Image (cartoon, rainbow, N blue to C red):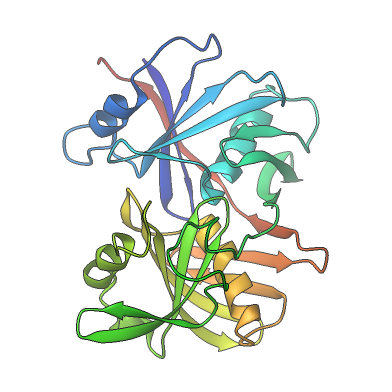
Amino acid sequence: MKFTKMHGLGNDFIFIENLGDKEMDYSALAITLCHRQLSIGADGIIAVLPSKVADLRMRIINADGSEANMCGNAIRCFGKYAWERGMVKSKSFRIETFAGIIIPEVIEENDKVASVKVNMGAPDIRREAIPMLGDETAAISVMLPLGDNEINITSILMGVPHTIIFVDDLNAIDVKGIGPTIEKHPLFPKGTNVNFVEVIDRNRVKLRTWERGAGATLACGTGSCATAVAAFLNEHTDRTVAVELQYGELLIEWAKDGTVYMTGPAEESFSGEINL
């Protein structure tokens, strides 16, 4: 099987073309291929598929075999992948995902894709949409029971559920310790991604993410978008925010019409073949 390895600021994926839409056990494939010691290694696999309602369709399967509705870093990589291979004719095109139609726009410099800007749609702060148990009020700066303590959180659906925690010192946070506890908290029936955020100033934050189904990742696009929305709602930042990740940054703008735009890089690491 042929594959291409890509990453968005370190959040890495194995791209597989299946334009004939043949039956494949993507869950089993992801568990096998994403193993970092015994196979290619990645945070997930991306299936490039035909679509009846858009230019192409994208499926995202996490390293543990679970499927995600959307992924911000993957959609930027998808945009670069499709454009550079001539699979689309316009720099701005439509991709079908389980979170709806997503529209990336490739930005070229010297005939190469320098970055990809993505219309990520609008966030949903309703608990029933996330989903999150509790009353009908939005989960903006609410207390989450955690053992004998409570932690202040904001939860948002940005294609996938995200829970944001603002901290004073990001380096002091045990992401791998706290992350899975919140991910599987009883208040989140389908789990949640967990974002730890240190606010630098009105236009810049630092982010570390524990991703549902993938664990601690080097970057998270939907998490960056949800973080920017949460930071504005909690009056920490303005509507446009640079989100610092471990290997670079994303520019997130929450426009006044409610749409979130994400701009950032996407890189191709290598291509190859693997004998399954």
